[in-house]
Image 1 (cartoon, rainbow over the protein chains, first blue to last red):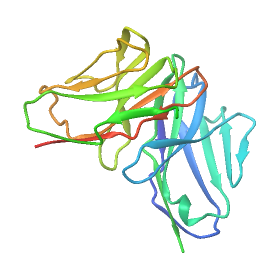
Image 2 (image 1 turned 90 degrees about the vertical axis):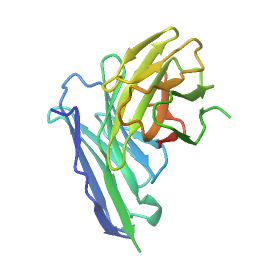
Image 3 (image 1 turned 90 degrees about the horizontal axis):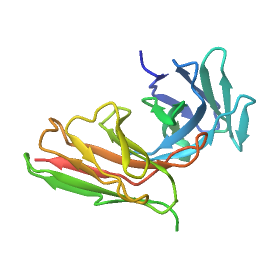
Image 4 (image 1 turned 180 degrees about the vertical axis):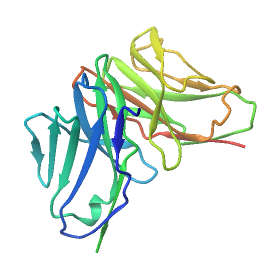
Amino acid sequence: RKEVEQDPGPFNVPEGATVAFNCTYSNSASQSFFWYRQDCRKEPKLLMSVYSSGNEDGRFTAQLNRASQYISLLIRDSKLSDSATYLCVVTNPGNQFYFGTGTSLTVIP
Amino acid sequence: DGGITQSPKYLFRKEGQNVTLSCEQNLNHDAMYWYRQDPGQGLRLIYYSQIVNDFQKGDIAEGYSVSREKKESFPLTVTSAQKNPTAFYLCASSQTEGLGQYFGPGTRLTVL
């Protein structure tokens, strides 16, 4: 069973739309949670950490549900520049990082 | 500027040759990691190091070797034993548990 699973998409949404991605993880002892963004042929970049209380950064909102072992990312008012692959990441005790395969988003004019 | 550098950006090698990829960080991070990414796939962990002079195998260590003689540097050698070495190689570092990883720009290795 994979440590982290994501719907690969692709998600094709019009500008201004709201889009949500979900991710599930298998290890209940997972400690830290993140969303990364990866542009085509570039390195992943940290988008935001995810906390149990939920957290927001501008148009982006991340949520963690420990009981159901999933995390989510909500993007409001999508921009063309949001087009990228979004990676869900969890860490286990020992600070080993596990990456999902990513969800592809294309924002259409 | 603080960050992680990888060199070269593109690398071409003949089959059967060993090649070493460079990774340097000036973030004063203790932990460093090497990943491989194949087209349309996720990141797979090759090796990681939590401290100088110590490193651990990841999920796909066969055909690779590393060293961690300095905190700032974590070079990866792709040996001739690696069956499918052509890939995008990413180096990352992190500090304390609970904080994210930061990636270098990557090296695209093509073995001809």
